[in-house]
Amino acid sequence: MITAFFDKLRAYTSSSGSPPPLSTDSGAIAELQDYLEKLDAAGRLAWASRQFGNRAAIGTSFQGAGIVAMHLVKQAKLRIPVFTLDTGLHFIETIELKAELQEHLGITIENITPAFTLEQQASEFGPELWKHDPDLCCQIRKVLPLQEKLTSLDCWITGVRREQSDNRSSARVLELNEDENGRQLWKLNPLVDWTRNQIWEHIRQHNLPYNRLHDQGYRSIGCHTCTRAVADGTNERAGRWTGFNKTECGIHTFLKVKN
Ligand code: SF4
Image 1 (cartoon, rainbow, N blue to C red):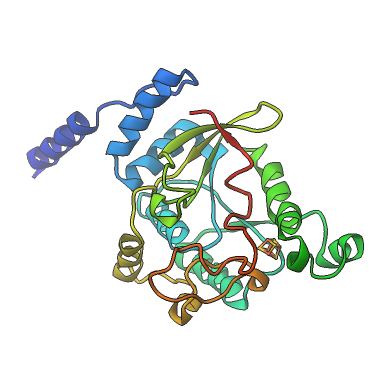
Image 2 (spheres, helix red, strand yellow):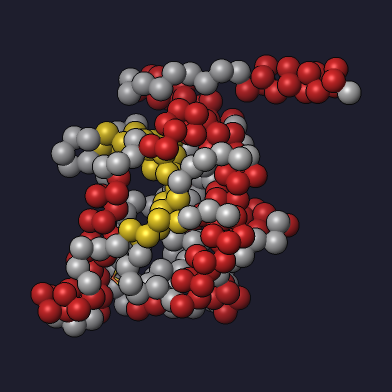
């Protein structure tokens, strides 16, 4: 039995090898990207945990990929913190899901809140800002709080998948980003190559809690003010900001991808 264990261990280490060193040199990044592409999602998360410790964190809005990432972390007994951007405008189902996940996975999910309450925002910019300037609303309630949170991290772990939209189709498993002040930040997309079907298969197979709104035709779920149910087969980001030429809230576009 012990021999079989060591055979498996040898097979694993020879197939995965040691990771190339982390470096901001573009050739070294390409080598690391190739290495991480060949690992499975759990291996990618384990790499981030070893490399960055608690300066790597999962940011989630409780879509399927975020749920899978949190579960993989739990299964692999990794200690990767989790945070969410609490806009104050989430569906009650999303708020309940957060509580369920915390209990089910035995974790604490940090709430990151905007500097302005909804009342302060209305008094400063007018009521229901999302109806006339959703970009500004997302900037206040999501992008600025995230930017502040990211100053405490070296690696932001996301649920971005290539299949989600045209904008995301070229996402890499690991990207080096730079903000407007020149600060560099790694972004790990451990489920970048997973399909929607794979995500849901994993959730069902492990009986994980998920947002019940998915059973009512909602695909990608954000604030209740800007999310609609959509028909099957449409783009996963359809149903967000209906009536506006907007498919991203800005949290995945304010950073410049360097490599
Ligand atoms: S999704 Fe809508 S309500 Fe939520 S922050 Fe963006 S514009 Fe505002």
